Image (spheres, one colour):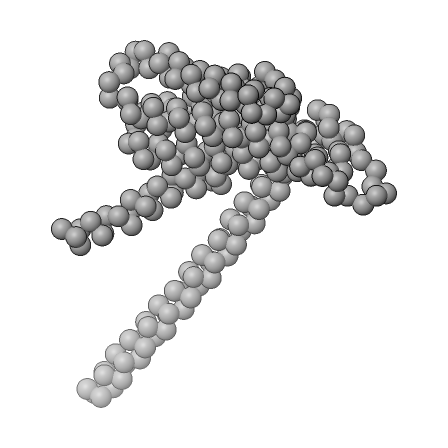
Amino acid sequence: MSAVSTGREPSKLRTLGTDFLRGVWTESSPFRLMIAFCPALAVTTAVVNGLAMGAAVIFVLVGTNVMVSAIRKIVPREVRIPVYTIIIATFVTIADLVLAATVPQVHKVLGLFVPLIVVNCIILGRAEAWASHVPVDRALADGFGYGIGYTISLVMIGIVRELLGSGSLLGHPVMPPGFVTWRVMLQPPGAFLTMGAIVGLFNLGSRLAKERAARRLERARGSGAGVTAATTGTGAGASTAGLSLSN
């Protein structure tokens, strides 16, 4: 029994790790899936704004995934979307009230975008496409993965925009005294420029990785063909020698 449990546990952990990493990197939004652009462009004028928005998304996404997974077998299919929406709205309201009570200045900057998490396609998409079909532990790993991946995306955009637009990071000046800030980076055009640059880097990295993988596969095939040819040649030589001796 213990041997069976030991064998299953690593497999289970690998599955949860795959579920987590898929949201962090493989299907990271908005850079990979190209969704949830509005808050990513609107609130990332500073890193702290991205962190606050990301924390709210993580809370809502994890809570929604766990709740949807827990009740997936008792909710009639015909009313599942309204039920999911109510669950999402509940967690969004909690996140909104907590942000307003703990970081009122940041909450004021985020404004309407926190309540708009209710209609964030990431939240409802994961609830419908994933959490409603898997156990709670896998739904939890998926929620954390997509939430953290989205937070990382917001922070990356916020770092670039705050550094170039304000010359600071987390509110602390970090650029040289003579640095001239790029005010455009704090405006919508700067958000689009930053987003496009990061998406381009992601796509470039993916293309280079695919090319390296293709080259490795080609080398492996070449090595395999060489070994096969050598083996065939050795076999043919042995057969010829045998025929000569028999004659």
